[in-house]
Length: 307
Image 1 (cartoon, one colour):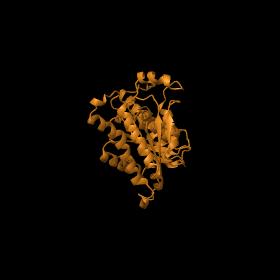
Image 2 (tube, helix red, strand yellow):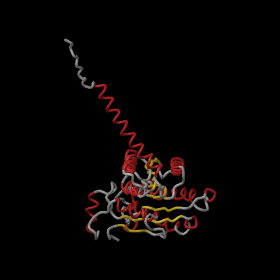
Image 3 (cartoon, one colour):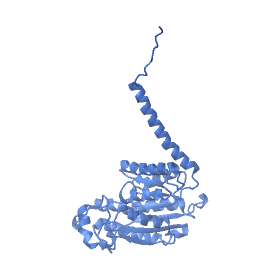
Image 4 (cartoon, one colour):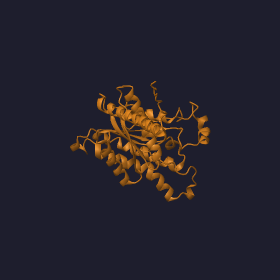
């Protein structure tokens, strides 16, 4: 009598299981990459523009980068020391790009690239703009001067050091000036005429401290920034460039402590601190997204009703 041999399918070995896991990971990565490639190659819409956001790794800067990318702008996320935060902003934007590509959305979501530079150093600013052009393949159309430092909160003027003063002014005043200068060189319709430059828009992030005078060094620097904007608003339009500013009130960022917020809440008619995303909306408007195209030399106070 013939004996029938039946083979039992063996359980997958550990090696086979590992191969399956790696294969699934590869397919997931390929899917995401294909989605981005499909979006960049088949989307009928191009980027609305390319915006350099200084101090773009956190707070108002990070919120601005995310908002602009969601509205179709490519963004250069500048940072000085927060590389992890800057890459986190870019990863967030990349994830949104993948999501839109997978959903077959025809809305263009901008690309984001982190670029390290200390805006208080003249040479770093030049390298920042060189890097923007080399990595994106074109000059920027917008600049957001957001990078800034607070400096000492309480200052006895008789003990104020030149080192402290220079540090705040270098970042909050010289930095925006260096950035404005490089921007005009590269996109001004006269300065860069041979390159076919079409101009652009600049937004300075000022502060209500320019009105209140506190903290002293920070307030001094923001007052100087406002004066720079007022002067440039008279000359830059001839280069096809608009310049404006937003003056946020107390906003929920890492520069502001909970105690500072509690202290000023009674002075704010709306009864709360601002959110970075709300300031980002004003910045986008002044850049010309959804309006703002006739604004030049304007400073919008976004402070919940506080003067």
